[in-house]
Every structure is written in C-alpha cells, then in structure tokens.
Image (cartoon, rainbow, N blue to C red; front, side, top):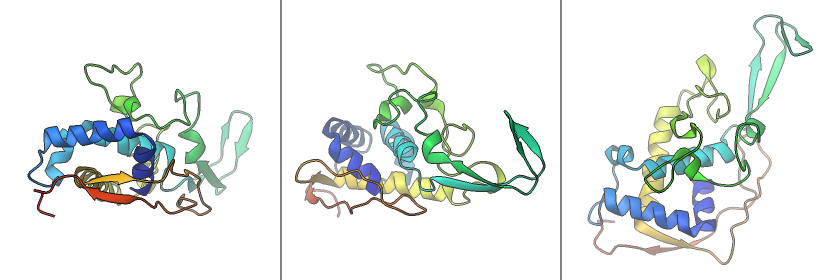
Length: 198
C-alpha cells in the first residue's frame, strides 16, 4: 500500500481519477467495503500496476525437479533456481514503458482503449510476465486475502483523505527480500468528507 500511495502522490491526475471512481461507485456518505472492490476497476488497475513495478517478493526461489535444457543451458536436477520477478515485470519485451507507473495498462474505459491484453492479466501466476505472488503450487497462499485487504484499505485511504507531501516522493528501493522503500512515506493527511463515519 505504501508503494501505491507514493506512486499516486507523485501522479495527482491518477489520484484524482481514483477519488472520482470511489465517489461515483460508493458515494460520500459511507466507507468503502470489500463488496465495492468489484465496482472499482481503476483501483484494481492501480494495485496491479503497483505489484508489477514493486513486487512484494522480487526473487522467487525454486528447485529443478528433473534435469532439463533451456536454450543452451543444461540445468541439473536439484539445482536451486532464482527467478527475478522484478526484472521480468520490467522487461521491455512484455511491457511498453516498463519503468513508468501506468495503471491504464490494466484498465480501459470509453476514453482509453488498451492496445494489448494487459487488462485481463491476473496477478495470481497465470501470466508469466506478471508474477508478484509466484505461480503454481508454490505460489503465495495468502494472495486472495492480501489482495482483498489491500484493495479495500487503499480505497478507504483514498476515499477519506487528501495526501500531500513537500515535492516529489522519493521512489528509491531499499535492500531486503521484500522490496521495501529506501525511505518511509511521510505525508500530511487531510480529511476529504466530514460526513463519513470515521
């Protein structure tokens, strides 16, 4: 969520679009609920794009179950394999402008038609150019719960608050196995609606 909020703060037009979607789908008199997520396709696109650029586990570790060849490389049985999810999700062979935050690549409306099939991509390991939670039997068991919580929580924050910072948010990545931010997100929150039951 911190990565998504930082990206949105750096992209005010996208933040405004997300706020408008929530206000139109949910209204201004009640909080976002889990059941509302299905009616928030732009929020879903923001989460997908955040997971593409900032995968929670940038390296997947697997073991070859049998000897095989890939291109000119022979991989022996029991070899430990490291899959660089971070690099795959930024590969220019699969993604146009791979280093830019563009939720529109996973979203289309009357004004924005997507030229590729990214809109229908799933983050659950069915599309190998987007593997934030791994794939197959070794995929993250908490994917469904995590996505539901992140969608609802991010939408609630966007619905309830204007987020402001002094200038551009630093998007540097820190060291670690879970791709943390190099610097914590520091921003000022201002309530958007006084009638919401906060």
